[in-house]
Image (cartoon, rainbow, N blue to C red; front, top):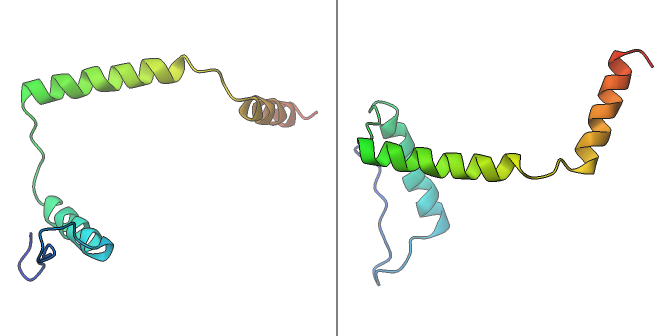
Length: 81
């Protein structure tokens, strides 16, 4: 973490408070902007497998009726109906 940005865990070793988690996340993001992320081949391959699995499940889901209705309205409007 950058100098001057410190997040302490509770003295009893418990979870940090929500505001501390936010501050830690913010500080880590600020620091990470300057550091390129490098993943090893095994990690990249696993991420690829997980994303492929997620997307294949996602695209097999039916389109909600509400979206279909919105698409029909948009199509009608574009045709000037």
